[in-house]
Image (cartoon, rainbow, N blue to C red):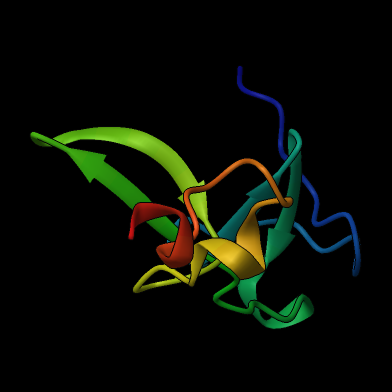
Length: 76
């Protein structure tokens, strides 16, 4: 016999048609938590590289420390 699982917030049991959110092996009803789109997945040739916070990149001078990028003036 399988064990019934309860929501970590409301302690209510899950029905077969409930929307479930799983975070670090804890189970929640979808309407018991707030979901926010916090990032994007970067892909390379169809394989996921990982999550990123920006959807279209950002300027190197904002993301990298001095000396970790080539300055436009250095190229001239």
